[in-house]
Image (tube, rainbow, N blue to C red):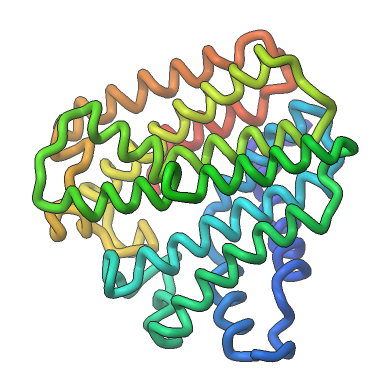
Length: 296
């Protein structure tokens, strides 16, 4: 069995081809919009969320073609959120994944339409491809991603984030925000991957959901530490942006050292949630390690 780096690299490279195939082709009208969609999705990022989909799919023994579609849908939602987050009305950033943000490379109106189109395409993919032999189960998967993306998930977390600028949040308030803003889509990635395979026991789904919750929070804690300590070239996005915009973070609330301890505790809890799955959970274990221990 390949080591984690080889496994992740192979999936990242193959997934790039999946995205190229599922995205509208650049010569299809309207060409500028489709080119901007491809610009915003392709050739960038670590693909952590799709890797979580793949790892959970492997645990559940899911068909690769089905997992590919679920992973693409999750990544399209994530990419749309980044395009919108970077716009002047939100975080007003100029760099993402090491290249100019969509509204800088194209324009604000195009960036708005890119986000709208990527979100629509995510649900189109989930609806037009068979992900489960049970239609009701597939419908629940579509509902899962919708809930994770909307006002009670990612978008709601972003709304709280925007409303929290210049404010001092308590730890529970900060966790509530990030369980929605960052964690909801990560939890959905794990569950969608698992649900592409044979039906798991309710207890197993609950353990995977708890794993997703813990790694989702850990991801944000580590992001806050990196934003405070790493440079722009390393991150591929503007470093120090949270401090510049006076946003509450785990670093400003706890300090960097305590934030690292919190990430380590979430890491331990995530790994414990996978107990009982045995070797089937190997890639999820390794992704938890990567998320918490990453330096970039």
